[in-house]
Length: 279
Ligand SMILES: C[S@@+](CC[C@H](N)C(=O)[O-])C[C@H]1O[C@@H](n2cnc3c(N)ncnc32)[C@H](O)[C@@H]1O
Image (cartoon, rainbow, N blue to C red):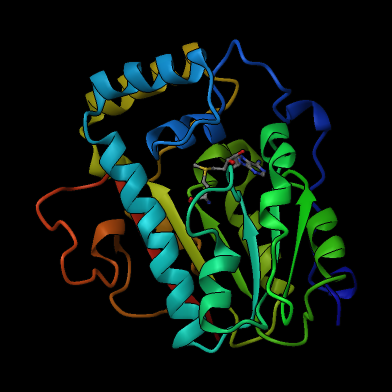
């Protein structure tokens, strides 16, 4: 059954107007994140936003890097321990070290990865994601996460929705405000994949920051960015995993999820994460 044919498919079509247009005069999440990771695909407005965020949350650089490290550990777990060979990676970001297909194909070269992002700068760099191993495959969809119908229809050209798929929504759901019903968006994606599929999420945590800091961060975002940051509580993040069983160690801060020897255990990020297996 393809995503398109799924009887449970609920449509979430949004106007393209809500997607970011290429504009170097305001910060974009993809470029802000690139700067936090030490990349070069960012502009003065992105760097100014990071400097403003860091005044409110000095641990933001640690949070971004710990988040990226979680993505790597989660994909490695999914490929090596859970036996997953198909990935739907939504909110891909500007390509950097350890992209999903590189991590998955290092374990299982036949892995197939469909990337999705809506920012024109990620599209401009998408070629760097289309460097699959011969045995596997990678493709890229230029789409908004809220347009689940387009994503599932196009993903079905690469992924077999009768077999388990890992849906990775790493550091992207905070870009979806409650008014766009992110829980229904996630449920729609997970309805389209069979039992034994996985969901990996990381998400900025309201309850990992004190309330004053959170308000200040939202003010900075409002002034400097085209996109919002909706922080959510641990319970709200747990709600995304309805219908799944969380794998060990459950819902924790990103740096705590299957931390490896030598990882810095003295710092605290402001990002929740978990990986769940669909029942
Ligand atoms: C912080 S980056 C995360 C990159 C990668 N997942 C990681 O964790 O390393 C967030 C990405 O999500 C993308 N994004 C934000 N809102 C989105 C939406 N509604 N649809 C698709 N992509 C979105 C941004 O353009 C950006 O590239």
